[in-house]
Length: 165
Image (cartoon, rainbow, N blue to C red; front, top):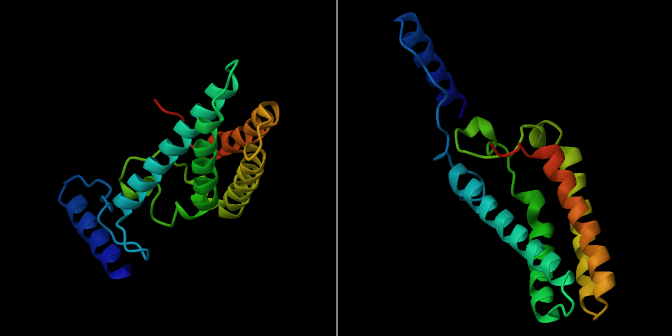
């Protein structure tokens, strides 16, 4: 990896010396220890985050209804819980903006990874509580815990995600 980086730096310096322009290399095809490429990891994370967002929407939409469908709420809650448990693993080193692959993830995720991981744990805990209350039929309790879980999710968005343009 260092040799590749050094070669890229030397190439860039040689182009600069000749008056050529350089741009950041796209590292999307670089392999990660998990067997995925950087681009595949970012795309998988984005897909999972969209699934979690859709599940939150389902829960929030249902609890607002006069007759919420618990059979829609429970699978959505399970999706939230499953993804929340994994979210801390979705951001391995090299999958940030420096990769050249489009992502809304802020570099703060890797610069302050301890805080990010603590936020991921908090989301997982809140999602676990949501799953627990969703085993019952108390819609008010589900709604309250969905709010707490959504708050943990929002904390990460506010701290670790760039706003969409």
